[in-house]
Length: 153
Image (cartoon, rainbow, N blue to C red):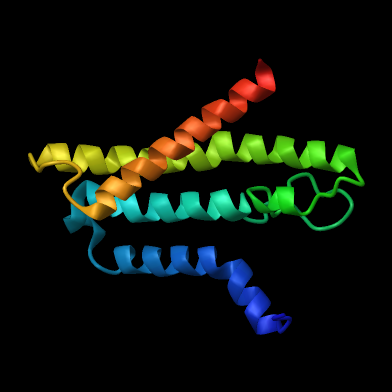
């Protein structure tokens, strides 16, 4: 339906745009004055980028490419059942990058917020943002362990 280049690039780059915007807001507003909180938005948005796209393009283009630029959720979308080995490779990349990069980043962001709240004696999970954030994090952790269990049982 939408085939324009502008739509495609906006849709595929939205997590990076969100991360850049968030990082610029934090870094231009005296992050030292924010305490531990200054780490929360950048870690969460970087985790989002990793969940959706995986790592940024860290390998050179061409036939010697070792690390694909889209290794998060989108690595599974690019494979087809016509090539089962491609599906297996996509799943392996997906699991490695989700478990070794995205999940630890989002866990660090959640932990930082809990430490921030505890450092000044504030109550935890009093807003909808906090409650949905915790529920989402729990869902991601459970999903990760279920994936791990299914693969290695």
